[in-house]
Image 1 (cartoon, rainbow, N blue to C red):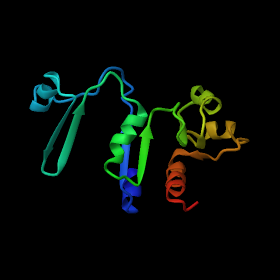
Image 2 (cartoon, rainbow, N blue to C red; image 1 turned 180 degrees about the horizontal axis):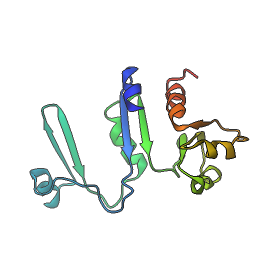
Image 3 (cartoon, one colour; image 1 turned 180 degrees about the vertical axis):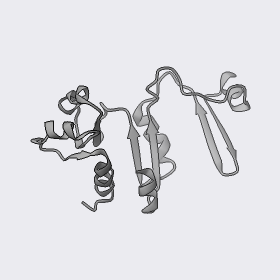
Image 4 (spheres, rainbow, N blue to C red; image 1 turned 90 degrees about the vertical axis):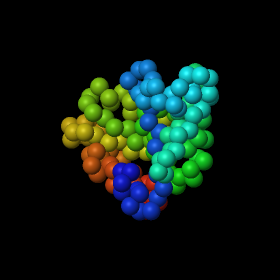
Length: 147
């Protein structure tokens, strides 16, 4: 989806929630890590056009993360995780245990199914219910306003 949006000329930013517990990996013992361990709130490393920002806080809200990405003036910000946030969302159902998400989550725009049996269960839904591959095209059309 990112590649297709970028190919349409859109500047895409992403937020990914690290859902594996703990903190995401960083390169230990580099200067930027040493700066943060010494007390810097934020350390930025730039070289060859690449920028890496390392910041520590007790907890970052999605709103703060979006504010940070907004500096880069993206056309669209895709968010993975954060399913209870109010933003428009596509819900991906892997199996029947995920069906409960459809009733619990708010602002669902499309339901994407990894198998056709799930799609059959939701055939009476007022929302679009699509195969995961068709769903990517639907989302791109939704974002670009070409639906």
